[in-house]
Image 1 (cartoon, rainbow, N blue to C red):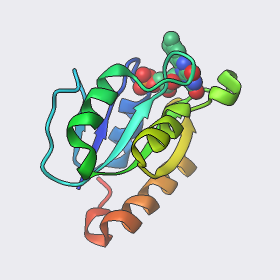
Image 2 (spheres, helix red, strand yellow):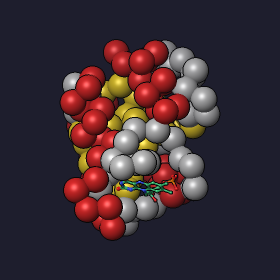
Image 3 (cartoon, helix red, strand yellow):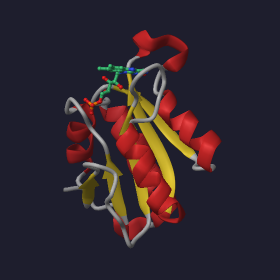
Length: 126
Ligand SMILES: Cc1cc2nc3c(=O)[nH]c(=O)nc-3n(C[C@H](O)[C@H](O)[C@H](O)COP(=O)(O)O)c2cc1C
């Protein structure tokens, strides 16, 4: 199990670092994975999925078990909408939405989701 993430200004990167799981950062979307993953992305534009994330999903869809998105509530209805867009377009289950680098509660929710999706042995916290 792998956390695959995209981060432009560092919030998602900080959140993922606190999860203490094996992770891969999307650079240009041409990455290929060989094990199941949870995808965590930021939201851009007006509720859009970053281009590099779309490219990654096109290549690796069968191994993506869920998506979580970071955003900012100032964006109203477009808050963390990248997750909804990926659910609509690819049928990837939305696991969670959180603001910026998340709170301890957000971390807990993601850890629980990892447990549910991938099993206990994957939940060691660094
Ligand atoms: C140009 C730009 C557009 C954004 N658009 C949205 C948006 O539509 N919805 C949202 O919830 N957040 C939006 N955000 C906020 C980011 O998704 C949020 O700050 C996120 O935590 C960034 O993650 P990162 O620091 O890992 O790149 C936008 C930020 C920028 C700079």
